[in-house]
Image (cartoon, rainbow, N blue to C red; front, side):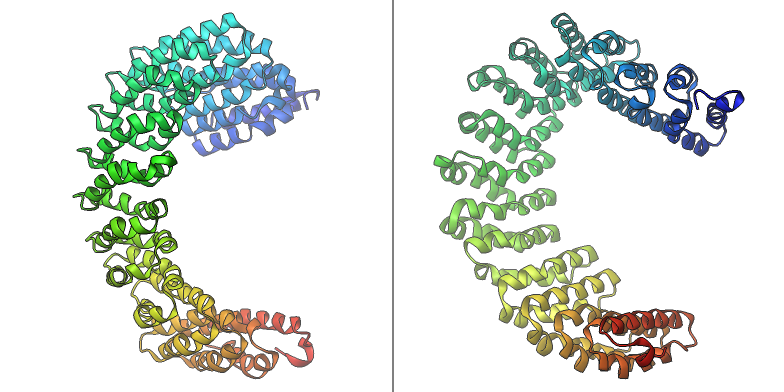
Length: 603
C-alpha cells in the first residue's frame, strides 16, 4: 500500500487520526489496538516516517490508551523494517516511559527491554544507551524511575567506557533525593548486580546495597533485602561474612516491621544463598527472633517458612538444631494470640514429621497437632486436616483419629459455608487414610447431611464427594451404604433435596456401573418424571440423558424412551426443551450401540 497512488494511500492513516481524536475512549483504544494492521497497510517506510512521528508528537490520552500503545510498540520491530530500524521505536516509548501513570511507564520499560535485545551492539551504544542516560538524568522522577529498569539490559553489550558511565548513573539514582527513584533503584539492584563483573559487584554494588539497606525510608530498605538474595549468590563464600552479613543482621532487627517481614518472607532463599555454615551461626538465631517478633505479620511470615527452613538445614546437625532452637519457638506459636500466625504454622507444621521421624513426631509434634485440632479458629483446624498425609506417612493417622473426629464434625457444621466446603474437599483423602470401617462408623452420616445443606455449593460439592468415595471404596460399598440413602431423598418434601437425588444419580451412575444404575437408580428417576415441580421434571430429562450411556439398549428402548416422549409434550417450556435435548442424546447413545434409530427409535 506504501506504493499506491493518489489519496487512497493516505486512507489508513486518516482513519487512525480520526479515530485517535474521537471523543469516545473505546474508539481510540480500538484504534491503538489496530496499529499493527495500519502499519502493515502503510508499509515499513511510511510507518517509520509518518506513523511513529505522529504517535510520538500527538499522543496525549487516557492511561488505558497509552498502556495499549506501550504494549503494541514492543511488538513493532518487523513493522518498521526489522532490527536494522528498531531504533525508530525508541522516541514514542521514551515519551511513554516518562508519563505519570505507573502501569504505563512499566509497560513502556517492558517494551524497551524487549526491543533492546534486537539492537546490534553498535545501535545499542548509538541509540539505546543515550536514551537510558536521558531518562536517568531527567528532571521528573518518573523518567528516572524508568531508567532503573533499563541498565541491566544494555550493560553486558556495550564498551567498557560506556559501562563505566552506566555504573555511575546507577550510583547516582541509588542516592537520588526522591524516595520513589531510590525505591526503583533498590528493586533493580539484584538484577543489575547479576550482569556486573565480580570486582564491580564488590566495589560498587556492596556499597550501594549497604546504603540502600540503611535508607531512611523503610520501603527502600525492604527492597534492599530482596536484592540481598541475588548479591549473596554472586559472591564467593569467604566474602559473604564481611560484605553481606552485617547488613543482613541489621535488616533482621530493623525498627520497621515491614523490613523484618521481608527478611522472614525471603528467609529460605537467603538460607540457600549464604550456605550451611552461616545458616548455623547467623540465620538460626535470626530465625528464632523472627518467630518471636512483636509483630504478628512477621511471626506469620516466619511461621510459613518453618518447614522449608528446617528442610534446608545441614543434614548432619539438622535434628539437633530443630529440637534445640526451632521447636521451642514453634510450641509457643501453637498458642499464639493471633489466628493468622496459628493458621500459617498449621499449614506447614505437619511437614516437620517427615524431617524428625516417627519417635520425635509422637513425642514432640503429636501434642502440638492435637492442640491445633482443638483450636478455636476453623482455618487452623482446616490447615491441619488438609496436611494429614504428611503424618500418615510417618506415624499413621490412627494416632490422631480420636481428636480428628471432633475437629472434622465442628468444621462440617461451621457457620461459614466456605469452611464447610473446604472440609468436604478433604473428605476423600481422609476416607482413604482412615479406612472404610472408621469412615462408615464416624463420617458417613456427615457426608449425607451435606447433601441437604441450605447452600447449593455445599450440596454440589457433597455430590462430587460421594462420587470420589465410591471410586475409592467400590460399587458394592455404594450399593449397601450410599445408594439407599440417596434414593430415599427422592420422597423429601423439599424439591431442592429431590433435585439433589438426581444430581447424585448423575454423579454415581458411572462409578456404580450398569447393574446398580438400571435396577436401583433408574426406577426412581422415572418415577420422579411425575413430580409437581417443573425444575425437578426437567432435571429428570437431563439425568436420563446423563445416565443413558450407562444403561443397556433394552432399558433405553422400553423405559427411558416413553418417559422422554411424555416430557417432550410437557406444559412447561423448559421441561420440553430438555426432554428434546435428551431425546437427541439418547438417539446418539443408541446409534453408538449399533441400533437402527429408524426402526427402533421413532421419535
